Image (tube, rainbow, N blue to C red; front, side):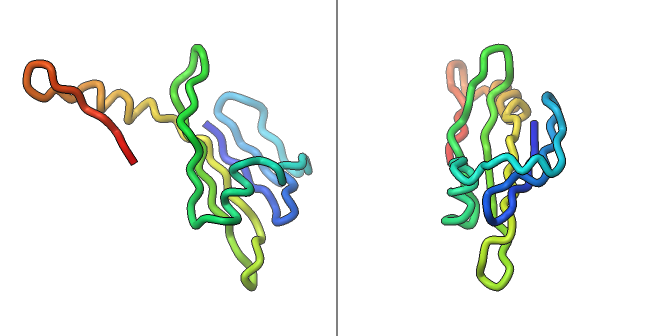
Amino acid sequence: LSISIVDGAGAERLHISRIGKNRTESGADRSGDPAVMGAKTAKVWCGPVIYRPGSEPSITMAMASYDNLVVANSVIAEISLKPIWFIVSEIHVGRSGQGFVID
C-alpha cells in the first residue's frame, strides 16, 4: 500500500502510496513512529495486522540500513494482506476444516 524512507534522524525523505499522496523530502518527524524505532532495534520489524473499515487488512514492516554501524535510513512498507487472505479463504480441509496464517 505504501513505502517510506526515513533518515537516521527520523525525518521522512520519501513516501510513495497506492492510496494516498506521494511525498518527497517532506522532513516529517517520524522518529517516534513504532516502525522507525523497531527498525533500529530488530533486523526486521513487523507491526500488528491492521483492519481499516472499507479496506483490506495490512501489516507494516520495517528494516534499517546501516553506515559504519549507525542507522542511515529505515525503509517502512505497509503491505496488503488481501492476496494471502484470499488464498487462505480458499483452503478447505475436510468438510469443516479451516486454514490459518501464523507467524
